[in-house]
Length: 218
Image (cartoon, rainbow, N blue to C red; front, side, top):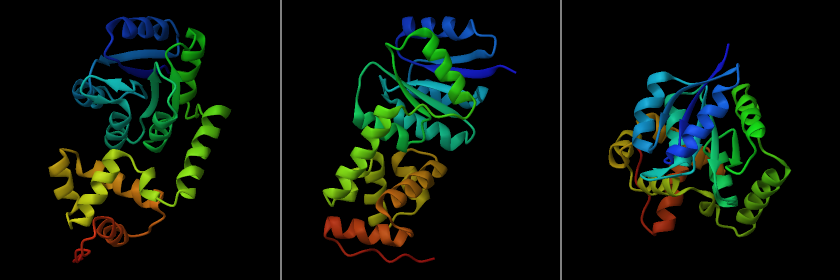
């Protein structure tokens, strides 16, 4: 059965080119397209694809946060990030968001189709350079002794709100996210910070803001 693919890119020419390339493969089927985060959040869950090919830079947000949000709604979804830029920071954030791969738009057609097939089959596309960049980033952050630097902007916001004593539901309402997405953010930031409990994160956030840690009931 053909793997079902959804394309998200704000450039129509790029989407058309990728759609024609993938549609020529018997084992790949393009089931939808979107040009923005807003469109993608509506259309992707409606068709429940196997793979989402996401542009990193979108007019109303970025593909990395979109990847995280979509995967919170569709746990079986595989995300392949597509970008015009070589950016180790974006690579790190994409992998931490759960993306299965990160490829440049200058990739040749056959390599892109193979990348989509690899991701659809549950594989990963971290090549040697990408892996080295990721490990160097983690090592550098740990050596600097500031684990919070490893958090994405959204994770830092969640950490700050945890420090203010907000529940996941309250954080979700304030950030306009699904509660499940907030739970995923909390899990990711706890793992990055080497913490086991939410209360530890609240204490850390309070120390960073020089405020007393809020009491957590239940």
